[in-house]
Length: 443
Ligand SMILES: O=C(O)[C@H]1O[C@H](OP(=O)(O)OP(=O)(O)OC[C@H]2O[C@@H](n3ccc(=O)[nH]c3=O)[C@H](O)[C@@H]2O)[C@H](O)[C@@H](O)[C@H]1O
Image (cartoon, rainbow, N blue to C red; front, side, top):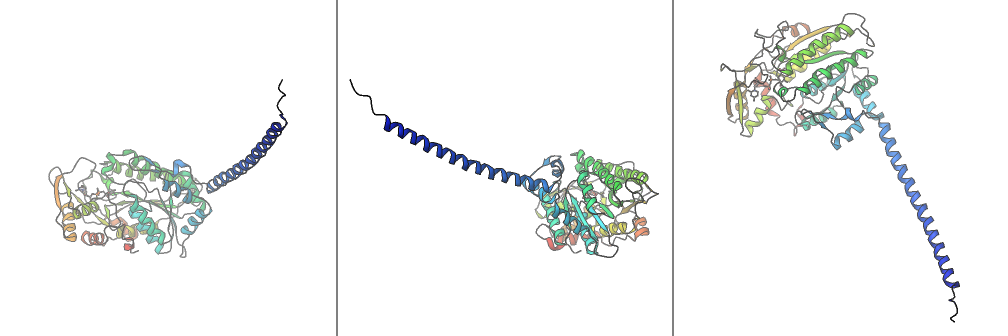
């Protein structure tokens, strides 16, 4: 019978192997818990960082585009996170809003990345007022043009807060940081013809956004005085000429015009109930350097230079259409004149304490020019013959003719337009295109 195998050696070996395995497992466990701890710490730090920044809710930090789509790009998220709030953001708001002249204004300029907003912000800053901009940089037209304007403002120490008029929380916060003496409200969904494509964007900006701004203004202490952009389009189908503030404005031809007219009525309500001092300015087809690419003079210039055909509208009875084209520098003077003569609001913390100023003015050029003439001025400035298609004005909200009587604005703040269309277009063409030419602002 065979003797049983000697197992004493294998048992020892197994015990040794088990011991080694245990040691390795505990080492592994220790290493992974260290790693887990570090990872948790990192995640916690990142979370704390973002929460202390306390940027506005995501819905508000998105940009509502002209096509009513919400655009949330990486760069937007980053800019919301870094510019939405936080200590350094508040410091920038405070610094930018502080005037640098005795009795200077502190002005919140909405739509500061826009055409008129940028020019007005620079003019205010230049004379020593504090200016904070607000803009949602939507994509109704190429936002890179708005970004280029923002860059110019930045070079002049003007800070633009990136946000939407409908973001009440953000607006309230701004007023808590900076007790603005004035609001220059220029943010809007512009464009007459586009209203047929995207009606809701007009309601959202020009009505809901305006009401939201007035709600914040009425609750502010002190209440600011408000100057805002209405439009020549409110005259709609009015046939009296030249257009005076006393003429009828109850026949708007486009939804754009209807929302601006609604704004004028809403202004009346807030003035009446809350004592807000409000001045509406009816701008007449404003043009000039750094203008809006959706406007005819701008895209005509681009298309003529590129050899593309342009549509020149005429009325259905084959008359020329005409506009009281108004140069940007004249409009800036009008806006500053309105701000300078705006009386203080009389209410406090949402309660009226007495009657307050309510005004409306035309800001035009007193001198209508036909679109045909506009094209021939451009042809001679560009030295290129336009490929003109003369067509009947589509039924898209356009009106055939505008002509401003500006005697009221002249009487109350010396408004006197001084730039004719040829001179203004020469200045426009000289610095076209703008993105590559940021030094062309002369304020
Ligand atoms: O004063 C205002 O309150 C408005 O002014 C501006 O509207 P409008 O006066 O209509 O300017 P704009 O579009 O440049 O058309 C100029 C002319 O070209 C004609 N036009 C237009 C397009 C075309 O293809 N062909 C053409 O002949 C067209 O029939 C018109 O006769 C602002 O855009 C608007 O936001 C608002 O501020």
